[in-house]
Image 1 (cartoon, rainbow, N blue to C red):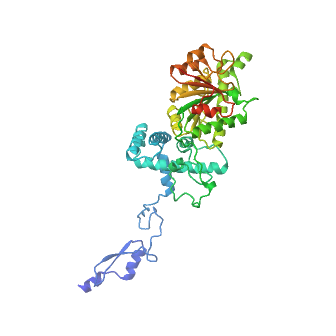
Image 2 (tube, rainbow, N blue to C red; image 1 turned 45 degrees about the vertical axis):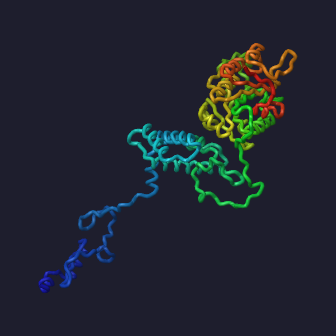
Length: 451
């Protein structure tokens, strides 16, 4: 048997020629071993050097590698799978849950609700799993952090990223103080302690962070107050706005805020533009004149916001005008959440506060006080309050007496609206140092209209 096997086996040289002619394997047999296929793809023995996908000399097509996708390709695919509509629904759903949980992390059931809302708002091809929603939120947080760092390094205040404003409303206070301590909102950005730069553990008196907008247990008469600031009083003794007056108001509002009072502010615009004067002098269309006054109230709001934030008081401006770069759109529930967090909220005033240019800022203050469940409306003017016949300011007066006296310090429609909703009103001179903080905390100052 061994001899017949050796006789049938081809010569070694002949087998080598078969390999060189393109055969992928050769049958090699000996007397002591059965015939086995021998791989010939090693270098120097007929290795197939053709590129993947090309036809080899034996007419066969070589196989393509199975793993050619890169991380960049996966990222592009991931990005293409999320439409703008899906991202918008995801952010809105996540924000509602996040705020409802008092800025705490979402748990399993919460993520299920978010994923269901995304699925309901998109077509069946855009359905997202819970894991996809989590990953997308994490990616958006990372992008937001990078965007804020880029803006800080470039000294810019405007971002071209379309989701920046939505992320700003949720994580807008994620800043690192000069002392190196992260604010409460910074914890929500998702930055692990390993990613944060290490700092010295030694504390000095100057390195201890100052916590602002932290409510104390001070007993005040009112918990939530709407502060109406007269535009005329902001001008001081001149025109436009007096920086000293604005800073004085900001300092006293900050004092009341640190005492635990939730402060919402509405500002007039007469220091920049008076619609009534232009209507009577130039016969200008009344709605047009009042719309200009609305824009003046927004300018005052931004200036006062700047003064408050220099004192490390977190402040939000809300406007019925669409101004996404400088103000949030008015949202009652969001405004109340800001106040619950100890932030100061500034409404743009007439028109920009109510959406109707024919309402006065006094009426806007009364309306907002009713909407956000405020305990009182205080109006700061350049007079000491409602005076009697002898020009002496009264400490207390009823709503009916205030209307019968034809009070000129406040719009009568606003007074009647506050009477219907049982909201006390205080009219006082805010140019007197200390009066603003006293009025906000409920101390006796000016004239109290009640009952």
